[in-house]
Length: 79
Image (tube, rainbow, N blue to C red; front, top):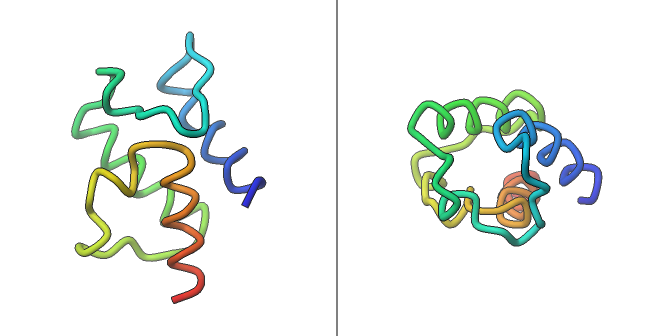
């Protein structure tokens, strides 16, 4: 799970260059996120972790922090 967080943090750092994100920090509340970023994030998750993000998964709470993204990935691997 920690390796996943490292990959997620590295991806997010391209968009949040001047900010060190905490694992539980809500990236949407920071105001830097737009719809293009959201699509890039979903595509990154699918490609990097080899999972399919379904319509049922498309909830902001699943993508709001490094922890929540990591948990989504873990849940999809188990399913």
